[in-house]
Length: 213
Image (cartoon, rainbow, N blue to C red):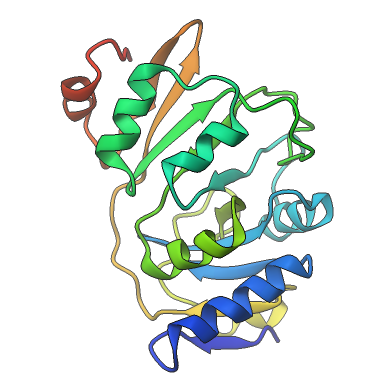
């Protein structure tokens, strides 16, 4: 059974240290994001990222998302950040905005697609524990802890975690349900709304009028 840590008890710095050690040792962990529990792994560990996809039952070719502590990190892992993308980062991060951007070709990682997509989905989350961890760890690969295709997991199912091959489950109780992230993709020289979610198209265009649907 995967060990469980109650984030509502004890000191946050100790929880972050425990999570960081597991990540650096090459393991997958479970943590709370804004509206669902997620798997996290070292984005540069092919083994850990693959293990995360196996836990979810993903098909081959599915790419994990990358979570960062701040927009500054994005400059190092992408090769082109359009001006409008920067404006959207400044306005909506940390928060429920995912940007699919062209990755830096010098990165030695495989998020699950064997680098065939030539895009990485990046986000700066608002979750306090998650951001504290990202500040220490650097970019991490992430995916919903729910099986592929299922709704977000809002509470840790203690019977389910018995079968999870993860280092630790960081439990923050029942999370609030909410809309998914708004996804904007860099394509054909412009930015396009791939999915309208928590941030409306109108809100996006107020900041970056050139973004299309």
